[in-house]
Amino acid sequence: METTDQFSSKLIKSSDNSQIPCLQLMKDDQPFGAPLKGALIEAQYQVDDGRHLLFITDDVPYEETLRIYLIASNAEVLDSLEFGGYLANGTLEGLNIVGDQTIEFRFIHKKRCRLTIERDRGWKKPLAFKPGVNRPGGLKKRYLALDFV
Image (spheres, one colour):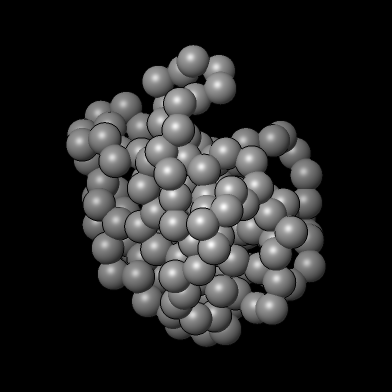
């Protein structure tokens, strides 16, 4: 895994008229994939030849949400998770690559988080036991495993 700057973004209006900000990823000044929830790309990494990891926030003080996306080279969102929200005062800090598939960071309450990206989809521990962490899309096999350390 290594830091990259392949993507830029353009803030767009939400397609469902919600208050959640949306952005369009741009690669080589061309739209890349479908719009994603969030307003600001905080960090981006190339995981391997075909996958990218993006950390995106809503950029709303005192109600911050961090969205983490694993995206394929064909712009498909392979996996995602989010945490934060109403009255959550968080700042993404301390991003540190600790292995070729693992990164650590702090977000809400300065709690240390470890995110591991698996090479193949697999069943992950339910996030219901991690306060404030959600996975869109229901029950299915996942690539991203998040633990608090």
